[in-house]
Image 1: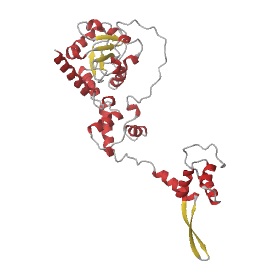
Image 2 (image 1 turned 180 degrees about the vertical axis):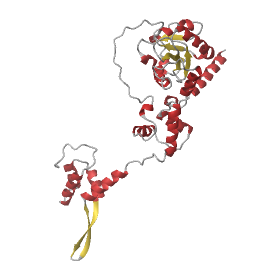
Image 3 (image 1 turned 180 degrees about the horizontal axis):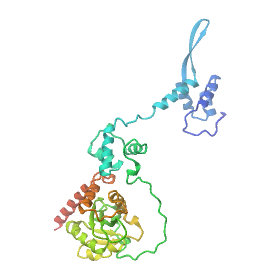
Image 4 (image 1 turned 135 degrees about the vertical axis):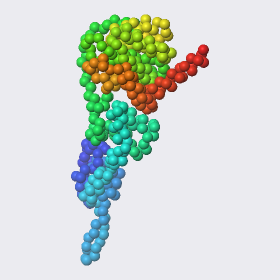
Amino acid sequence: MHEQDITRRQPGHHLSQMERGRIAELYATGTSKREIAAKIGVCHQTINNEIDRGTVKQAKRINGKLIYHTEYSPEAAQTRYETARLNCHRPDKFAATSHFLAWYVNQAKTEHWSPDAAVGAARRAKLFTPEEMVCTTTLYRYIDDQRLEIRNIDLVEKANRRTKQHKSTKHKRLAGRSIEKRPKAVERRKQFGHWEMDTVVGKRNGRESVILSLIERKTRCQLLRLIEGRDSDSVEFALREIKLEWGDCLRTITADNDPEFSTLDKAFEDTDTDIFYAHSYTSCDRGSNEAHNRMIRRDYPKGESLDDVSPSQVLATQDRLNGLPRRKLDYRGPQECFETEVRRTRRSAQHVS
């Protein structure tokens, strides 16, 4: 039975300089490769490979003659290993991808595109060859290393998030049907026409303009409207125009349990749209709304009044967000997907009629 000197050697680690010296001592005394492997604590094939790679040609002068022979040299083996380690890393693609990186920086600054959106859209549209681009992970690394004119603070989703403290609160009474009664098909995002609704507030004090936000769950398409105040009358007024244009695409609407949405059932009583209300203080019930509201905040920071904002500015924000490529949409924009679904819905309605 072979004696094993190293009983707790961590598997997967490369041989150390000290272990190479031990291999040289044992091999010089005629110890077999399998015995050396057992003593070092590695597979015998590791020793075979190590000796093959570390064997060098040596010369000795005997009786005036130069005699050549081969032997394992731990120093030569270590030098060869260190050289190989230096050359094993992939070359830096920063210089070779400068055109793509400049394009991404422009998209990030002007359109607020995320690194993943930029990489996905560029690949889908074949704007650059694979050699001219980097992957999403590498692009994030360049940002972390401050090699681009974009910083982590500029990225919507990568900013540091504070964990909210749980507060014991009294739940308000739901204005209508609970989200628990909503069809399960809505959760799967496979069927078109299911919406979430919320308001984006500037300043919280006083009566002033707010943004009404509706997002379609399947396509992630948003409808943004600037309304006069955070009250049910203002919400109903904005919904009239939306109902006229998109009424056939409104299967369900899930709203927050706030006063401005308390009369939604009345507003949609003459339609086939079903209204559901999320649980109080449970933002995850409307995950799409919450995620997209953070994107809206890039244009309208919290605490700044919306009274000086024009409806055309809000529509410009809507168009920008709906043109943003999304990974979950195969890097198409929500607007493109929404228009496809609208055409399909209206063709189906024509066939039925």
